[in-house]
Length: 197
Image (cartoon, rainbow, N blue to C red; front, side):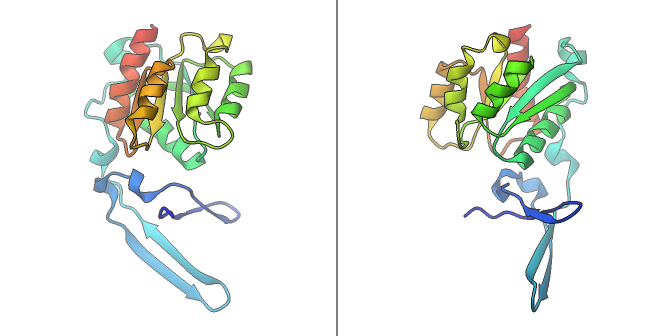
């Protein structure tokens, strides 16, 4: 089982499915607070100090300034972890990519349903998901009229190159391997968007 932590919610606490190994070493210096109760069990909280260099891109120009892209990109982020979807969105913004709207889906089937009623400029998709994985999603995406020409970037933890090769041969324009930085996201997404323009 991957280590994970609790994220506070307004009403209650929910366990995240975000493995700690996706964070870069620059942010892994947590302070621990462990509370024990006789009838409530134990609660461990980790405080992660964020070092700005761990998440920031070297360039503070946005993609529009640097590459002339539109500043109203609509992105679809497909991942079964809601926490990971937020990390991907934050990484896109930190990479200087201005997002007008971010649509989300928890698996490939949900993503196909989203695309039936929405048009997007960019899709970032995890490979390992329940219901419909990213490889099946990218195959079925070829039949979706609203997704024609939309660049797809795969997000993977796979050690096997076979999954990446399969995704690229099915139409993906690039891939990002976890753990990733905003700079790595920028390196993959900017050329994919440039190819679309």
